[in-house]
Length: 134
Image 1: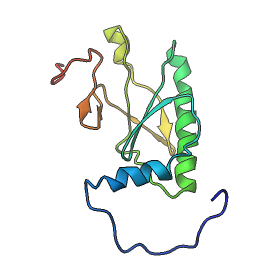
Image 2: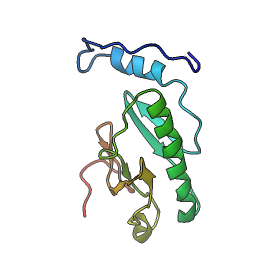
Image 3: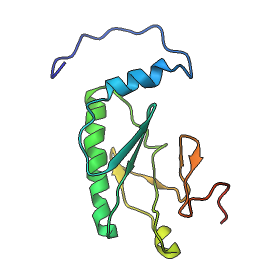
Image 4: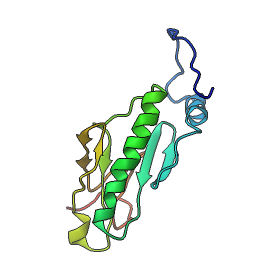
């Protein structure tokens, strides 16, 4: 509670994969996520940060948001995965939607994925269902 933390104890059991209790407990545990400029979409233990910007130069705020969230995760002993975290651009113009962002998390530059998958749904700029055509 607050700035107080309990002593370390080894946890010998866990919740079964797919248990409805796991996302509920995660939601309760992370209920006090810090405010960010990014909009956050949270499902189970997946967090998506989305930022609407008029120019690409405004995107540097995404790195600040991720640093803020990484600090929170470190404080509460949550491990964020830079290998599973990607950046994407959705833009009305094809040539701009291919722009790769320079966003960092935990000191590492995040990979660019033009067709990211979030909770099993592949996102693309056309917002159509199906496999993206390259």
